[in-house]
Amino acid sequence: MPQVETVGPLDESVGYMLKRAATTLRSALDATLRPLDLSVPQYACLELLGQRSGLSNADLARGAFVTRQSMNGVLRGLQVRGLVTRPVTAPSGRSLPGQLTPAGRRRLRIASAKVRSVEKQMLAHFSPAEQGRLCRDLTACISALSPQDVGGLIEA
Amino acid sequence: MPQVETVGPLDESVGYMLKRAATTLRSALDATLRPLDLSVPQYACLELLGQRSGLSNADLARGAFVTRQSMNGVLRGLQVRGLVTRPVTAPSGRSLPGQLTPAGRRRLRIASAKVRSVEKQMLAHFSPAEQGRLCRDLTACISALSPQDVGGLIEA
DNA sequence: GACTATATGTCAGGATACTGACATGCCGCA
DNA sequence: TGCGGCATGTCAGTATCCTGACATATAGTC
Image 1 (cartoon, each protein chain N blue to C red):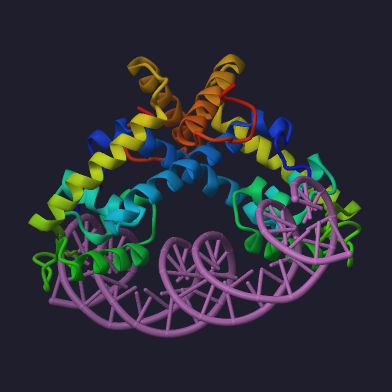
Image 2 (image 1 turned 180 degrees about the vertical axis):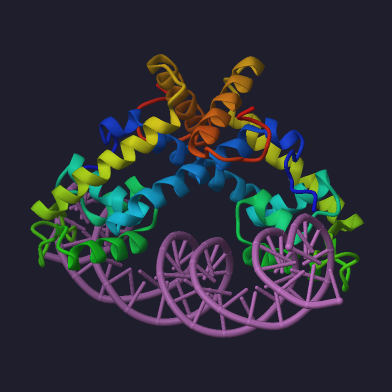
């Protein structure tokens, strides 16, 4: 069994390492959030609602990189557990603005702390300046792959 | 519809941008490989076999960040299309060493060129030194999140 | 006022990946 | 020699996500 220890040039491929880093982070987050009965998309949904209340299902889907259908399922799960609320009828148009309940806000506070702890661990050997640089590098990668608008913050 | 253009502090979260970059790259790769009738895991499988012939199903699964079961399905798909071959009986133990067929090698050559083109586009504004730095940064992130062995090439 | 375009929420179907479990085949050790 | 530990390949069931499609509500245009 060759054990793929060193697959060779792949270790020098930014794309490969990017996927690898994302997978590793995803696993770490998953393990951290499991005790809270939260999946990563569920946490993302809470975090988004915490930062901007009243986001619609479609807004949340875009923010969490999933489809509206998937986010709908996530949102329903959070709703039946009393962590978020949505009006039964749309106050305007068809979009149903979501909001955190007090319980949701409490859960988010705990989850957010754990997530930030994981992120801190991931960046343990990075200075604040290096963190900012890495963040800008990743942003540059994103904008280079999406010629059109990627969020309106780069490609000025 | 708030449009989540600027979700706020999330744009400064390395974790968030990491997932975003990986998702964007995945989409770009998917679009590039679709004309070749290859999914990203299928391409990863071919690439791994191209760089190291004789890898077993379990080896490939580890290299592509999926489970053995998933990789098995991928491998079967590639087998029936005549791109890879596996012996019917194991020459040693239970592992079945996979190999690229000439057709598989041809397909890989095309796919690999397209993938590298996407990667080049992603890193268009990066100097070789900056690419190496980004790669090392990502590697540091990975090793910081996995205290144990992550492949045997870092954490020396 | 009618019509098109866009955006939203929702339903159905299919593809994909994972967890759990099992049988089989090596290796190390008593 | 017999045994447990470990790795591999495989099967079944489940969960998740995506593509395609539809009905509805708003905004813009003539």
